[in-house]
Image (cartoon, rainbow, N blue to C red; front, top):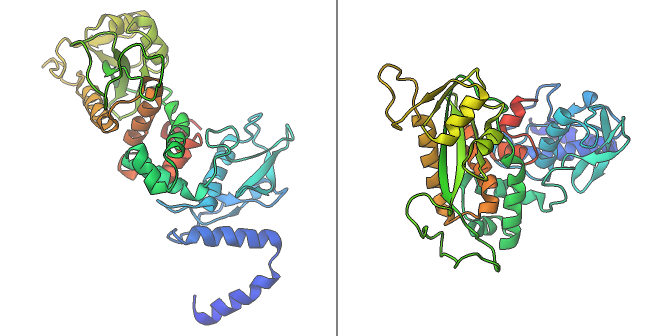
Length: 359
């Protein structure tokens, strides 16, 4: 824009209505770090005036790829409202209903209740939205809680609380079903009571420590991982290493339509037999049958290795929090090199990479 046009534009500000000024402020806030490309009409990242149906909403600039403030949180949150609708009754006929706490509010025409984009998500009522992009960057980098607190400029306990609030939705973000050849195998992670101050069943370890016994024991927590050749991954912490626990984790996800590769473990073979899944039992991990080279466990075993190497930086993960860390790693793998802070925030509010594919 040349100087003359800019001065003309500034002169027109005084005639803007209040809703128009609000929209202009949001657009300017986003454009500070966005690359100034407009969203196509009809996309989900837009804002509506009070009482205006979402179908008639006006487009905003796209949220920046890696940085966003409160206005960016609002724009990303609106994508969730567009896809999910009312968090109280799931009705999608909602209208704009003002603004509060830096977020647009909406009203459901069916149940007549109001809400914002974070209502009934783990991030509801969290403050300092201008620091959330830094928090998601810390999650992408996989830094410790202390380093995340330093990056965000918050207290250590706040950083810890934020971490697990941001991970709560990702822990449940799993594919509904795997396709084609599926590899399934168990891995074991040392039990940890990290953070527990009293009532310990044993003497505490330092910085993760080591098991008191060699090999498998009650100190090793079983985790089942199933992964197809497209990279879709599901996993679960098992209460026990038995058929019932594996079935609870994999029923409906691995089906008779899959070619299921597993080792000769009693529990996983029993699961496949009971579910009517034709399993390719591989007695030697990493060594497929020369007559069937596509059937192996190399994919899932490599995932185990990456998972454990990544967990090592935390010097032990509390077993009660292990599902959150599994979801964290699963999200990093699913998003891969295209991961952005915006994608991590979408996952935290319930639109993770696997949830988006089922909407």
